[in-house]
Image 1 (cartoon, rainbow, N blue to C red):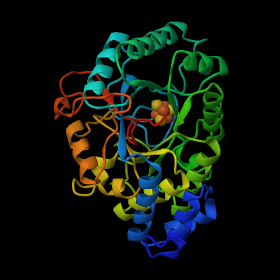
Image 2 (tube, rainbow, N blue to C red):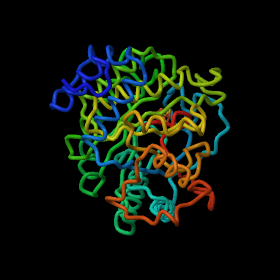
Image 3 (cartoon, helix red, strand yellow):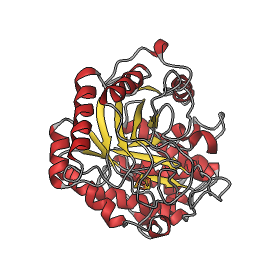
Image 4 (cartoon, helix red, strand yellow):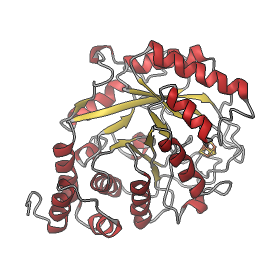
Length: 367
Ligand code: SF4
């Protein structure tokens, strides 16, 4: 028995994870009930033992904004809500390349091309599909970052083409537990989301799929979501925290319905349930965690971050994100993009231009 934290439930779970065992729902619920100090220490031990001591940063471009026909209750880009955000059609691929180059400069290891709609369709909008592929090729060929995509639902043919073009991760968040999902989204189902993830995985892409915390879900829902993601098999698990946007279905909430302690505990449980995934702190962190708290998830098992601005709101500067990692005793991942930390921007990745660069966030979209 490893007695690293002195908490029997946590130490037993850590030992089993390090032995290669997959923890289940019962384990997840028992862990969530443990004191935060022991839970964070156990998760940190798993990260330190199985990880490489780095935080992986990604960034995305909001390549097509607003006018989405879906009704996700947190999303500023749905036509069901009057949120006053800018809407635009698919950006010029050269603009997307420029955004990728800025993300590369700012330390991103991966760069995601995101569109705000149910799905880019090769059959219904062949011209737009061709532009998506042109953007992917430009970023792939002219930067060092890995190219990811978040294009909504996919057909098998579309997934095969994306994999052939070199898409590394396909992002399609599940948002919450299967039980709570219908409370948040009415126009498509949890199963629809899982189906697209399966199609992307079968085509050979790694999966990036995560959740939004603080939408009114229970702690059990948070564990259930992580268990659903175990079955799907994710390489990257983004954890958004709701940043309510006026006009959306969840816009009346003053803030995310979750405490700082519960955010940290949930991330720690996710680390133990997903020992080999990048548990990635994403949208809503700046508004739900103070500057003095943002490093805490990285002392509780998190090892990924979305850096720069968000899709419809500003984030903090990439240099601040590096400071957060270092405060937690971690360093930026440079496996893919060996960037120059001195050149990292201090004003947010979109501060020097008008392109919407950012991260899939709780107040934008989370496909
Ligand atoms: S989260 Fe995605 S699918 Fe849902 S409304 Fe927003 S853009 Fe549309």
